[in-house]
Length: 228
Image (cartoon, helix red, strand yellow):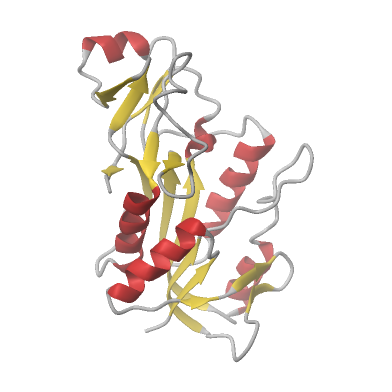
Protein backbone atom coordinates (compact mmCIF):
# COMPACT_ATOMS: atom_id res chain seq x y z
CA UNK A 1 0.00 0.00 0.00
CA UNK A 2 1.58 3.29 -1.15
CA UNK A 3 0.23 6.71 -0.29
CA UNK A 4 1.74 9.93 -1.60
CA UNK A 5 1.37 13.50 -0.36
CA UNK A 6 2.41 16.51 -2.41
CA UNK A 7 2.79 19.53 -0.16
CA UNK A 8 4.24 19.38 3.34
CA UNK A 9 3.33 22.81 4.63
CA UNK A 10 1.62 23.40 7.96
CA UNK A 11 -1.56 21.59 6.92
CA UNK A 12 0.20 18.90 4.89
CA UNK A 13 2.49 18.01 7.79
CA UNK A 14 -0.50 17.51 10.06
CA UNK A 15 -2.27 15.33 7.50
CA UNK A 16 0.85 13.20 7.04
CA UNK A 17 1.20 12.85 10.82
CA UNK A 18 -2.43 11.75 11.17
CA UNK A 19 -1.99 9.16 8.41
CA UNK A 20 1.25 7.91 9.98
CA UNK A 21 -0.49 7.54 13.34
CA UNK A 22 -3.07 5.37 11.58
CA UNK A 23 -0.33 3.16 10.13
CA UNK A 24 -0.13 4.67 6.62
CA UNK A 25 2.96 6.84 6.26
CA UNK A 26 2.74 8.75 2.97
CA UNK A 27 5.70 9.39 0.70
CA UNK A 28 6.49 13.06 0.18
CA UNK A 29 6.84 13.82 -3.55
CA UNK A 30 6.79 16.91 -5.74
CA UNK A 31 4.59 17.93 -8.67
CA UNK A 32 6.24 19.53 -11.68
CA UNK A 33 3.92 21.16 -14.28
CA UNK A 34 5.74 19.45 -17.17
CA UNK A 35 7.16 16.26 -15.66
CA UNK A 36 4.31 15.46 -13.31
CA UNK A 37 5.03 13.52 -10.15
CA UNK A 38 8.74 13.72 -9.30
CA UNK A 39 10.80 11.86 -6.69
CA UNK A 40 13.87 13.66 -5.35
CA UNK A 41 15.56 10.34 -4.57
CA UNK A 42 14.71 6.73 -5.34
CA UNK A 43 12.26 5.27 -7.80
CA UNK A 44 8.87 6.78 -8.46
CA UNK A 45 6.02 4.49 -7.38
CA UNK A 46 3.86 3.38 -10.27
CA UNK A 47 0.86 2.24 -8.20
CA UNK A 48 -0.56 4.67 -5.64
CA UNK A 49 -3.41 4.00 -3.26
CA UNK A 50 -4.03 7.66 -2.46
CA UNK A 51 -2.41 10.74 -3.97
CA UNK A 52 -3.10 13.72 -1.74
CA UNK A 53 -2.43 17.16 -3.24
CA UNK A 54 -2.12 19.82 -0.55
CA UNK A 55 -0.34 22.74 -2.19
CA UNK A 56 -0.26 26.52 -2.03
CA UNK A 57 1.43 27.37 -5.33
CA UNK A 58 3.02 30.75 -5.94
CA UNK A 59 0.59 33.01 -7.77
CA UNK A 60 2.01 35.26 -10.50
CA UNK A 61 0.75 38.83 -10.68
CA UNK A 62 -2.78 38.78 -12.02
CA UNK A 63 -2.82 34.99 -12.40
CA UNK A 64 -3.04 31.68 -10.60
CA UNK A 65 -0.27 29.21 -9.84
CA UNK A 66 -2.78 26.39 -10.23
CA UNK A 67 -3.25 26.94 -13.96
CA UNK A 68 -1.42 24.12 -15.77
CA UNK A 69 0.10 22.78 -12.56
CA UNK A 70 -1.40 19.28 -12.92
CA UNK A 71 -0.91 18.92 -16.69
CA UNK A 72 2.24 16.78 -16.41
CA UNK A 73 0.62 14.57 -13.78
CA UNK A 74 -2.42 13.97 -15.99
CA UNK A 75 -0.09 13.08 -18.88
CA UNK A 76 1.66 10.47 -16.70
CA UNK A 77 -1.68 8.85 -15.93
CA UNK A 78 -2.79 8.90 -19.57
CA UNK A 79 0.45 7.22 -20.63
CA UNK A 80 0.01 4.54 -18.00
CA UNK A 81 3.16 5.57 -16.08
CA UNK A 82 1.06 6.05 -12.95
CA UNK A 83 -1.94 4.11 -11.64
CA UNK A 84 -3.75 6.00 -8.88
CA UNK A 85 -6.68 4.51 -6.98
CA UNK A 86 -7.76 7.68 -5.16
CA UNK A 87 -6.78 11.31 -5.73
CA UNK A 88 -7.62 13.95 -3.13
CA UNK A 89 -7.20 17.65 -3.84
CA UNK A 90 -7.27 20.20 -1.03
CA UNK A 91 -9.15 23.07 -2.65
CA UNK A 92 -10.72 26.22 -1.24
CA UNK A 93 -14.09 27.88 -0.90
CA UNK A 94 -12.67 30.55 -3.23
CA UNK A 95 -14.29 28.49 -6.03
CA UNK A 96 -17.64 29.94 -4.92
CA UNK A 97 -16.59 33.50 -5.82
CA UNK A 98 -19.26 33.70 -8.51
CA UNK A 99 -21.99 33.30 -5.87
CA UNK A 100 -22.44 36.68 -4.21
CA UNK A 101 -25.55 35.64 -2.28
CA UNK A 102 -27.46 32.56 -1.20
CA UNK A 103 -26.53 29.20 0.29
CA UNK A 104 -23.79 27.10 -1.26
CA UNK A 105 -22.83 23.50 -0.53
CA UNK A 106 -20.64 20.78 -2.03
CA UNK A 107 -23.06 20.28 -4.93
CA UNK A 108 -23.34 23.96 -5.88
CA UNK A 109 -22.03 24.55 -9.45
CA UNK A 110 -18.94 26.73 -9.67
CA UNK A 111 -17.74 29.01 -12.46
CA UNK A 112 -14.54 31.05 -12.78
CA UNK A 113 -14.89 34.54 -11.36
CA UNK A 114 -11.26 35.50 -10.75
CA UNK A 115 -7.80 34.13 -11.61
CA UNK A 116 -7.70 32.39 -8.25
CA UNK A 117 -11.07 30.68 -8.63
CA UNK A 118 -10.30 29.82 -12.27
CA UNK A 119 -7.06 28.11 -11.28
CA UNK A 120 -8.68 26.15 -8.49
CA UNK A 121 -11.58 25.05 -10.70
CA UNK A 122 -9.10 23.85 -13.33
CA UNK A 123 -7.15 21.93 -10.66
CA UNK A 124 -10.39 20.31 -9.48
CA UNK A 125 -11.21 19.25 -13.04
CA UNK A 126 -7.70 17.88 -13.62
CA UNK A 127 -7.83 15.93 -10.37
CA UNK A 128 -10.95 14.15 -11.57
CA UNK A 129 -8.93 12.81 -14.51
CA UNK A 130 -6.36 11.12 -12.27
CA UNK A 131 -8.14 8.23 -10.59
CA UNK A 132 -11.33 6.15 -10.43
CA UNK A 133 -12.00 7.69 -7.03
CA UNK A 134 -11.47 11.42 -6.63
CA UNK A 135 -12.20 13.74 -3.74
CA UNK A 136 -12.23 17.53 -3.93
CA UNK A 137 -12.12 19.01 -0.43
CA UNK A 138 -13.03 22.69 -0.33
CA UNK A 139 -11.77 24.24 2.91
CA UNK A 140 -13.06 27.41 4.50
CA UNK A 141 -10.53 29.87 5.92
CA UNK A 142 -8.00 28.05 8.09
CA UNK A 143 -7.49 29.05 11.71
CA UNK A 144 -5.45 27.70 14.61
CA UNK A 145 -1.69 27.26 15.16
CA UNK A 146 0.25 28.88 12.34
CA UNK A 147 -2.86 30.55 10.90
CA UNK A 148 -3.35 33.39 13.34
CA UNK A 149 -3.81 36.00 10.60
CA UNK A 150 -7.34 34.82 9.86
CA UNK A 151 -9.76 35.59 12.68
CA UNK A 152 -13.33 34.95 11.52
CA UNK A 153 -14.84 36.60 14.61
CA UNK A 154 -13.17 40.00 14.27
CA UNK A 155 -13.44 39.91 10.48
CA UNK A 156 -17.17 39.19 10.46
CA UNK A 157 -18.45 42.72 10.97
CA UNK A 158 -18.92 43.56 7.29
CA UNK A 159 -19.70 40.10 5.87
CA UNK A 160 -20.24 36.56 7.17
CA UNK A 161 -17.10 34.44 7.58
CA UNK A 162 -16.50 30.69 7.65
CA UNK A 163 -13.56 28.82 9.15
CA UNK A 164 -11.98 25.47 10.02
CA UNK A 165 -9.22 24.84 12.54
CA UNK A 166 -6.09 23.36 10.95
CA UNK A 167 -6.09 20.43 13.41
CA UNK A 168 -9.69 19.50 12.60
CA UNK A 169 -9.08 19.98 8.87
CA UNK A 170 -6.06 17.64 8.97
CA UNK A 171 -8.07 14.97 10.76
CA UNK A 172 -10.94 15.16 8.26
CA UNK A 173 -8.61 15.11 5.26
CA UNK A 174 -6.62 12.15 6.59
CA UNK A 175 -9.88 10.26 7.07
CA UNK A 176 -11.01 11.04 3.51
CA UNK A 177 -7.63 9.88 2.19
CA UNK A 178 -7.76 6.55 4.03
CA UNK A 179 -11.46 5.65 3.77
CA UNK A 180 -11.81 1.95 2.88
CA UNK A 181 -14.97 2.68 0.91
CA UNK A 182 -15.49 5.22 -1.86
CA UNK A 183 -15.21 8.75 -0.49
CA UNK A 184 -17.54 11.62 -1.42
CA UNK A 185 -16.61 13.19 -4.74
CA UNK A 186 -16.75 16.68 -3.26
CA UNK A 187 -16.78 17.98 0.30
CA UNK A 188 -17.28 21.45 1.74
CA UNK A 189 -15.46 21.62 5.08
CA UNK A 190 -16.01 24.20 7.83
CA UNK A 191 -16.29 24.10 11.61
CA UNK A 192 -20.06 24.20 11.28
CA UNK A 193 -20.48 27.87 12.19
CA UNK A 194 -21.23 31.08 10.36
CA UNK A 195 -19.48 34.04 11.96
CA UNK A 196 -21.49 37.22 11.75
CA UNK A 197 -20.95 40.48 13.62
CA UNK A 198 -18.80 38.82 16.25
CA UNK A 199 -21.10 35.85 16.85
CA UNK A 200 -20.86 32.20 15.83
CA UNK A 201 -24.18 30.93 14.45
CA UNK A 202 -24.88 27.28 13.51
CA UNK A 203 -24.95 26.93 9.74
CA UNK A 204 -28.64 26.12 9.50
CA UNK A 205 -30.76 27.37 6.62
CA UNK A 206 -33.80 27.13 8.89
CA UNK A 207 -32.69 29.97 11.16
CA UNK A 208 -34.74 33.07 10.29
CA UNK A 209 -31.74 35.37 10.81
CA UNK A 210 -29.60 33.34 8.41
CA UNK A 211 -32.42 33.01 5.89
CA UNK A 212 -32.56 36.80 5.75
CA UNK A 213 -28.77 37.12 5.72
CA UNK A 214 -28.50 34.77 2.72
CA UNK A 215 -30.42 37.30 0.64
CA UNK A 216 -27.45 39.68 0.90
CA UNK A 217 -24.43 37.43 1.44
CA UNK A 218 -23.04 34.03 0.49
CA UNK A 219 -23.46 31.42 3.24
CA UNK A 220 -21.98 27.92 3.32
CA UNK A 221 -23.68 24.71 4.33
CA UNK A 222 -20.84 22.23 5.07
CA UNK A 223 -20.85 18.52 4.33
CA UNK A 224 -18.07 17.91 6.88
CA UNK A 225 -17.48 19.79 10.10
CA UNK A 226 -14.83 19.51 12.77
CA UNK A 227 -13.37 21.19 15.82
CA UNK A 228 -9.97 20.62 17.45
